[in-house]
Length: 327
Image (cartoon, rainbow, N blue to C red; front, side, top):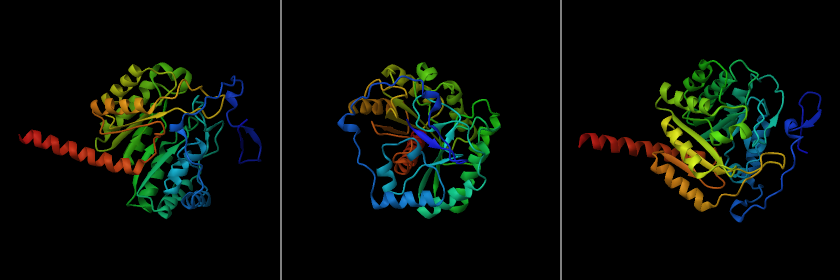
């Protein structure tokens, strides 16, 4: 049983208390294309030391990301702010569920300092859901963006936010107005599966959040991702693509769902790399500026390199549009 130790009192409790009554599902053998090397390089250790020295939490660890060895060896760590306990209980997620601690007002400065010391050209900041806060943590998110700008002005910033469901619309506006370079919010799965996979969220609310980013600041890149292998159909994935494009989303990520424990949502199937290649071709045809589609694709995997490609794709599109207008 996965457990966490509370910061207060050192008490041990289940990491996912809401899932303890779930039946254990059979383990599926991973195909060869999903096997990765165990972490342990010098670069990995250096990144781990900086993260620990600054008392930071990373989604790389909390979500048991399969790419942690590769990313940390390159000093790429996705910071997870607002604590390590989430108020939601999504069926796919490995982040601990429970009652979070109060926000730490020193966290924005610590994140900014860590980004500067790691010399990051591009950083990804995500968070747990904080439904317990009046603004869902939006103000804290914005403060982290501003702190990174102050400590590392040359670093481009990508954020992966909660949905701010049932919060004042001004909460989302405050994050948008902090002007990250990329605003990411993942839809995660197709609408039909929301009740079982993402029960605390609402599909069309998440779409509207992404749309609001473009309405308020058309210069910001928007990004969203889905997992496959949960029982969705190809047609449903293509409909999600269309919905994202209608909301102005620039960048889509598509990756294989991997079950954190046997009490999480079961894997329906392992999607073959050829199917991911087909999804990429379809997404590009639908007009996305950038597409990342592979079994090991995750929101922050290769984020820096992908941001450079995203900028280049927008520039090429703008130049092509000017050329067509001149003609």
